[in-house]
Amino acid sequence: MYRARRSHRDTANGGVTMATLAVSRYSPDAQRLQARSTMADDLEPTYREIFFSALVTLWFAIGTGALPGSEDWINTIGLIGFSLVVAWAAYRQMKLNVASLWTPMLWYRIALLSYYGIGSLVPIWTNADTQEMMKGFYSYFSYEIVKLNFLITAFNLVFLITVKVLFIAISNESVSKVFRDKKFISPSNFSMIAFGSICLVVGSAANYFIIFPQIAGWINFKFFSTIANLSVLSWLGYFMVIFWGLENKRRELIILPIALAFGECVIGFFSMSKSVMLMPLVMVSIAFIYHHRSLLRISLFAGCFVYLFMFLSPVVSHVRDMNERYYDGAAQIKDIPGLYWSYFTTGLESDQFADVEIGWMRLSFVNAGTFVINQYDHGMVGDSYRYWKIVWIPRIIYPDKPIITDVGRELSYAANGNYDSSSSAGLAPEAYWNGGWPLSISIAIFLGLVFGLWTIYSYEVIQRKAWHLFFVVLFGMRMALRVDGAFVSDILGPIALVVLAHIALELMNRFLPQALAGVMRRPSAQS
Image (tube, rainbow, N blue to C red; front, top):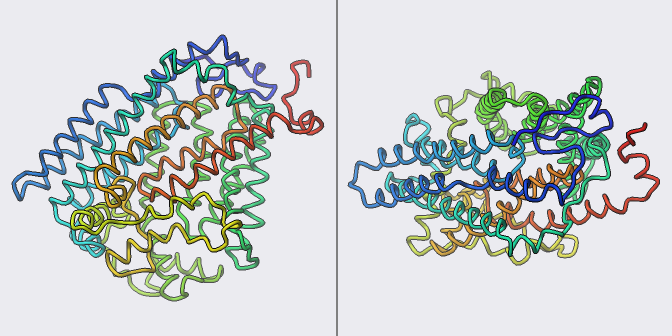
């Protein structure tokens, strides 16, 4: 559904036309039927997507009994078909409504395409050095890749069916009336520029006064990882402030957030983190894309960041390796630029992996995925779900709480005896490792419900201009990208944080003291 932009005069009071959804004044009663219809049309999986996903799943199911020697072609044809279906679904969603850029369903598809579409083609068609390095983790066979692809496509099929059923149920009158008059998401009492500025200040303070000093060794916070989560707010601030400045022709306001974003990239440089180097640039780019929306811009944006990711993967891997080898993982801040420089020179040592396509290899989880499937099929059932009962207990209450993410180190140790490295197989293979097909299907259904509801939630946040809830929206995008992660730490754990964040942000929006609200509330039309 397309709505024409309002004029600059209409947006001068701090309101903006968000994507193609926001209207000048939100009215739940007037908009309910139209919004629900548009939401279903724009966001839910189509029967065509489910049908072709089922065909790809059937292809791999038949392929598990194919003649030896034909596995590479079975995998190649099936993965190309799978990638086309997922890419088409993501393209369709973006074409129908660019606001779906904020929904978990879109990012789930992007992650699935990257890691289990394109990524699963890497060990088949990459060079011999890359294949050899991948098999250093686990020496898989072609027929094991066929089963892995069967598991991934079946998992995705169950996921899509679950989301489809969820949307059908929500559109049913008897089900939807339960939620119709509930105000779970209230329009923000802050303008976008006010709330974006708050996010920018808090997130940047966490970056420059906590995270960077901790990395540099100047301070030592006991609960550093908890405090560091506040840095995510800066990502929201970059988008909101820049977008508001562009929409309202206040270009001078975009200089500071752009400078802070590049500063955070520098922090990512010293922390040897690809995500911290890239995400600030992603949020800045999204603001410019939203200002002038087109599929060409989105395609160029995606291409540039795929290239950056491919470029940074081998560089960061080299730097981390040198850090572990020569500094026991504790290189001083003054030594880190030299580690990066050593990748492009022979200053420390010649690169023994010069012919390994590390960028492509980082996209593939075939070695870890086939390993855990092989483990389960031979009676060695995984126990990486064992911490699910305690994952929501804060460490301040349970000081001796085990380190949940150690299951990644245990996986590496089980595969190749290396406990100093952390690995993951992905949500579907991990579920199979812990409980075979029954648990894989159960986790697919659970994810379908979580990501489906979160997609609707994100849509409504944008529709209602609930800027104060954008932290939850961003967390949904981030979680959807973790289809390559571990279920307990990457999916189950953050859910409690997100629920508490929603409640706290809604209370803040509704009951903030009148004096503060009066300063930051949208200016009246008369002013």
